[in-house]
Amino acid sequence: MSQDIYTHLEKARTDLGNFIGCDANDLFFVQNPTTAINTVIRSLDFERDCEVLSSNHEYGALVRAWNWFHKEKGYRFVQRDMPLPVFSHQEFADYFCEGITDRTRFIFLSHITSATGLIFPVDEICKRARTNGILSIIDGAHVPGHIPLNIKEMDPDIYTGACHKWLSAPKGSTFLYVKKEIQEKIKPLVVSWGNDVDPSRSTFLYNNQYQGTTDPSAYLAVSEAIKFQTENKWESIKKRCIELTRTTRDRVLNVLGTPEICPKTDEWLGQMASVLIPHKDVDQIEEDLLFQFHIVIPVFEWQDQNFLRFSFNAYNDDSDADKLVSALKKLIP
Ligand SMILES: Cc1ncc(COP(=O)(O)O)c(C=O)c1O
Image (tube, rainbow, N blue to C red; front, side, top):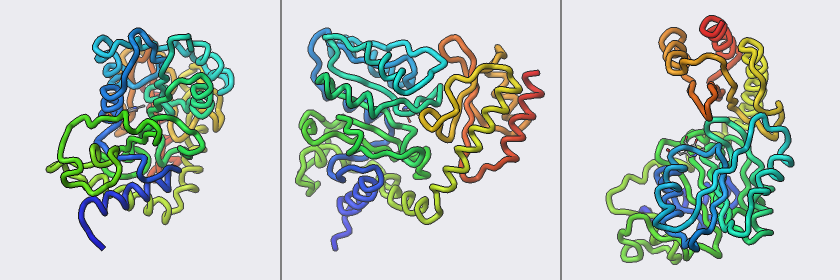
């Protein structure tokens, strides 16, 4: 068997495709979700004044990318305000889709949001996008290895996910999935050797998957990351972490006296949770948590409110939750 880079990449794509429920030839690797979404925005044709419907919970770099290209590409990037607290996925999907107008041609939405740590009802929203002839673009940066993902069942048009966050692959391993029917629309962000060197039969692959001296080792490690989690019973680890996230959220809310931003259900919460905090100086709290208590969590302002977001993984247990709760008692009395 040939052991050239294309064979290795094909194996990594195949293992990942099996893990996320899509054909290995419908995805290629990129460095990060920002590269994936820049590729998408630069590639697509937008009718003048058409709308890209999104939410106010999206990741800042990607909001910036959509805003950056709107004049050149001619679309309007509409961030629908999705207020907190959220109640049910059904209600959320209904309210979000009320933002669809006769100009909406694209939906761009996170599957799990960065600041608010919420699982959005993207299956339902992709379904409604299809019914309305709208192309769905999903930012699943936080999804692979975190919550179940079956792209075939969800049927988005475009989906990106990072493998370094919850799948334990190295940084710099992200995929961009594009449905077969629209793959010809995707143009390489960087034009390189293409089919001069890449034996893949698909234009989508040979135009996008390889450049001369980029380092593909993070991409190739995705196979090992999937194997590692499978061999180490990650499903039961995730279950434990999800439970720990929920009990810790109750305890933290109790200490801080702030309201929950979502119900304590599988619908909304995985292994991370954001909570509202009353204190003003978020940078100081983040710094104190780090230097006084050796706790690394983001503490930040989002939409004029202050939040902290914590998450748990295999290496955490109840003692970490105890440490966080007792630190917050001291820092935010
Ligand atoms: C929801 C979401 N989207 C996209 C990204 C993009 O990450 P990067 O800046 O690595 O491209 C992140 C990173 O944390 C994220 O949380």
